Length: 93
Image (tube, rainbow, N blue to C red; front, top):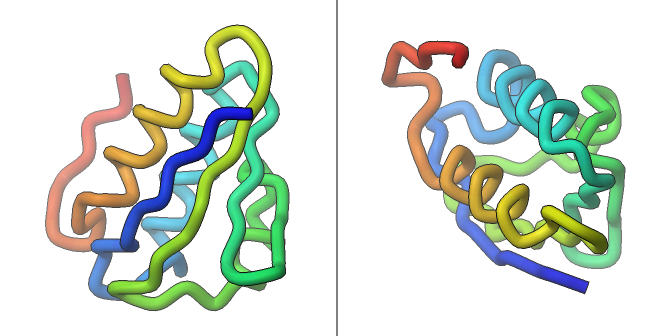
């Protein structure tokens, strides 16, 4: 199983816009991704699950995925979380 640990960089943490952008990217990833904070793990494509983590700026979360494309999906999602999504215009590609 592939894993990445990353600190949430967005000023509001994983709430509102940053959570929405993260969940949208997780859905597009094409592989099931789990986001973990401590002992709590939720599907990355679940908006309610991601919000329920309560991750604030600086919180370290672990992303996990398995299967073909897992490494690439985790690289993309980790890079997204490492940016302040509150402070930038994100172009949806």
